[in-house]
Length: 280
Image 1 (cartoon, one colour):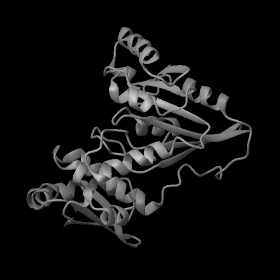
Image 2 (cartoon, rainbow, N blue to C red):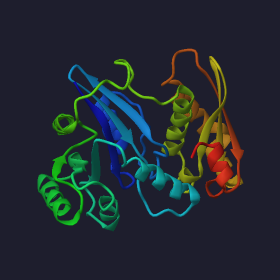
Image 3 (cartoon, rainbow, N blue to C red):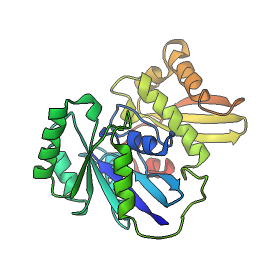
Image 4 (cartoon, one colour):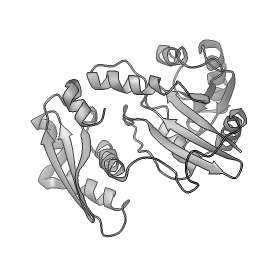
C-alpha cells in the first residue's frame, strides 16, 4: 500500500478547494468565487485498496493587506514542508503572472503543475497556458490540464500523485474523509453562504464561529468589522440571514435548529487577539 501527504497550493481562486472536493467525490471544504475563501489548512483523505492520500487544501497565496492575510500566507507556505507531493495550481483562463511565479519559487522543483479550469478555455488556450507554465514557473516537472468542476483530467492527476507516494501505512480510518471538526464545518457552511449572497466589500470582513452546540440547537456567531456591514449581512427584514439559514440547514442532518447572530468586532482582521480567538 502507498500512502502520503499532498499539498495543493496556488494563488486565490485557482480552484484548489473545488479540486479537492472533486477528487474525494464529496464536499469537505467550502467553495466560492471570492478570494481568501479557504482560511485554514483542510485535510481530505482519499482511501483506496492500494493507497491512502491525505490532501491538504490551503489558503490562496496573495499580497497581504491585513494581519489576517499575512497569517493565511503563512498557513499556506507552512504546508509545503514535510509532504510527499506538492501540486501547484494555475488558472487556464488567466495569464501566468508574477503572483504565480512567486508561489512557484517556493515549491519543490519536482512539484506537479495543475492547469485548472480547462472547461472554461479553448483547447488552444490550454496548450498555450501549459507552455507558459513550463517556461515561466520555476517549479514543476509534470503538467496536467484538468477541470476541477467537471472532473476531466482528474483521474489521471490522481494516478500520477499516487505513483509518487512511498509505501506506507494508512494514517486515517478507511471511512474518514476529512479531519475537520463538525462545529468548524457548520461555521464554514454559514460563511460559504454569506460569501454567495453579500456584496464585494463584505466577504473579507466576515468570520463565523459556533458559540453553542447542544444538538439539535446550534448557535453560530457572524463577525463583521463595521455597523454598515452588519446591515448588509442581516439584509432587509432579515432576508439575507433567512436565506443563509435555509441553505445551511439543507446541508445538515434533519432536525438541526440553527441560530444565526451578527456581531460587530471592529477591525478584527488586524488584531492579533481577535485572530487567535477565531483560530487564525
